[in-house]
Length: 498
Image (tube, rainbow, N blue to C red; front, side):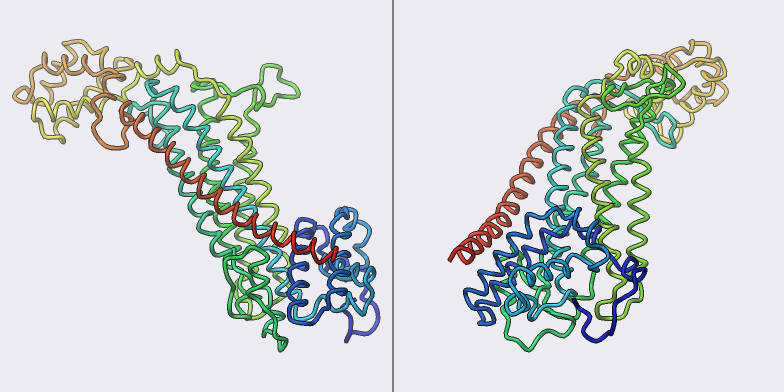
């Protein structure tokens, strides 16, 4: 339909090579909405009379009911993309004299961007909701484990004693930053490029502000070259998806490790576990492993998109067509990952006996003991560090699993070898070691953000309030958008029936 200058029919192989109908399935409804708003605007400036507008809107309403997957299958040899197909159908239904006017003062160049902006802003709102749901699940489970001790790790080696609640709450910080990135990204996505036309605007006195308002945008991308060329806000969106997947992959890896027989800290629900085709005893964390893999795929899509736009000249290039598939793939992987990991958080079980055993058979209390030497005996930290480090080595040499197993004689040898008898008595050191248990070590933690149970309970309340505040802000934004699109629907109904 668009072949005015080129003569003859494009080859079948070339049409297949250019075709994006499958990728366009996800934006077909948005393309129709954009065409409705554009047509109403054309009526307000006198390009379409009332009857012509009615005919076009009724045609678009009919097309809205199509199964666009079937369209992609059946029409791939006839149309390059969904934009050409929809316009062709309008012309078929309304006639060339009427339907041929619909694309006045519009190009596929601004049309495709407005479709993508409408699609992605909806995805942003949906993903923001899913992040808040995941946070809420984490907060609810955190309440259960405020006093449940476990080792915290650095370099995947036991480092300090913390709580299950403390680790779960650490995910909230990441996820909140992810939420804020998406929430902010929306403000840059929700700017209308419609009316920029091909690249240099149009001599027809269109009303870009009207179409922007009808479609629920918060303003315009004002420069026509910028509107049709730039994809930075979409890149930002995929970057945010990529960063979010890093957050999810960290949770996934923690849960994979903790659910192994070697750790044995948690057990995943059977609902979120797979099995082996040959080993009957296996219960595998396959969904979590797929999240790790999907993280890499989303990263790859981001790098692909950055490579596509790298060094493109100003103005639309067909290279940008390949943005859609990568964005839609990435979105689906992220949405799926959020749903799975929320379900896993809701249903996993904690092995309390195992965590109690590990917490009491570890050298992860070493720093707490060293700090008590600093606080109670006024020993310089570097020297207290030396004392405890040597005691740990002595315990390891004797195959002990914690400092509490050391005898008085063991401690005497260490202090004597260090020539630290003038710093602290053996009796005082043994007493301090005996007083520091996993539970009371947490009570001794004073810093904000530590695993002290009081601090955890305070943070849970604080994060709950923040979660609710973000839900309210998101609801207001979604409601504003919904209201704009409902107003457009009402106008379409009035003009279609009038």
